[in-house]
Amino acid sequence: MLNPDAEGHWLSSLEGRERALFLAILAHELTVGGREAYQVGTEFLDKPGLLRSVNEIQHRVTACLRGELRDAGKMDFVEALGRIVLEQSDPDLADLTASAWTRGRRALERPAPLD
Image 1 (cartoon, rainbow, N blue to C red):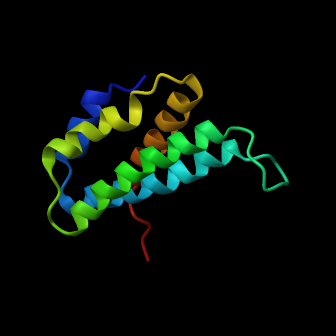
Image 2: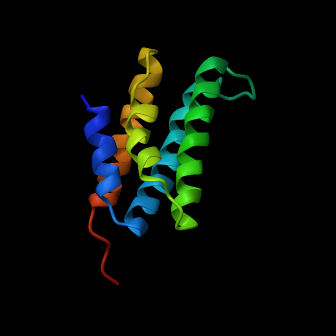
Image 3: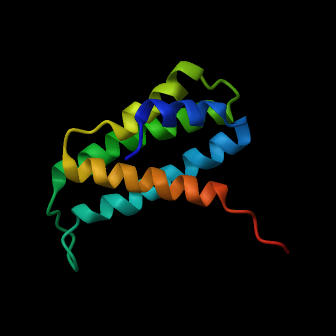
């Protein structure tokens, strides 16, 4: 299980470009997770509340990313992002956000392919 405070500290310890890359990956992974709210093969939603919650989290993740890209990232906001993303009372949402965060970390930690 991920520790939200430790993950926020890890995020704040990254260099600017690396932190921005993680935030972009995390935002993408959250969109993948948000697809769990869709009704397969239709344009209807099975879990509109889940999709709304994912959207609110993405809003904060992309706000943090925007701050990083403008070189104006606020470290207290960056540190808090671990809690914002990972502290969820709904078990489905908690699983979704933890999976997105974990996949984001793995993607960031993989060495870049050689050309």
